[in-house]
Image (cartoon, rainbow, N blue to C red):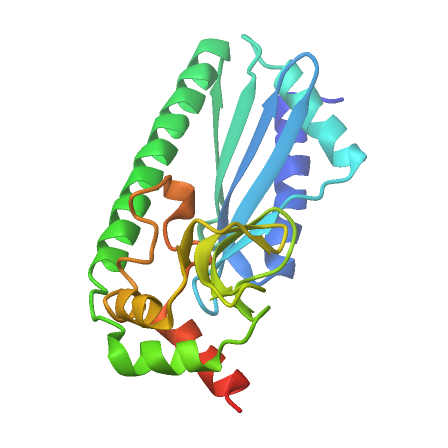
Length: 235
């Protein structure tokens, strides 16, 4: 496969061609390799707008080149990272051994967990702030629009969020929806009871914030959906 310098020059040329073809002059390449697998990826930063471009497809000839480079190192690395700055003609190589790479994966896992927790905190805070009540007028309009078999819900495979409507018994119903079918969690036999309940709800109270994080704001009933239903189905 040639000496290390020759291999690096060949790798650099491929990476430079990739970046330049998408209008990027900087980026980061990473290859991780174990006995049974090899993962190669890179992102570049577009000069025109600063956005990231990700590269996932690599031909076998390039993969062999990278594997040959990593196997030629002493001690052998399991992860190769190349930071690229074409404007300065810099390709900065760094590598990780097995224990270092495992520590990197654990750190990335913890960082992802923290970012996910922060995302959910922000999502809950945003949803909980939407406390404006639907009010009697919208509740009345929605109830008047309903007919037996009319439901405000999504209809697709698996979990479809929450639904609201009228069953064949002329009862007003609310509950989770699976595979397009509404499970009647709450049943209101009288229109006045239903209207009173709905008028006191808000996007916050209907956002499923007491349930699993997966359900928070996930295909739930909102003012916007209620108003659209009334508009689209009003006789």
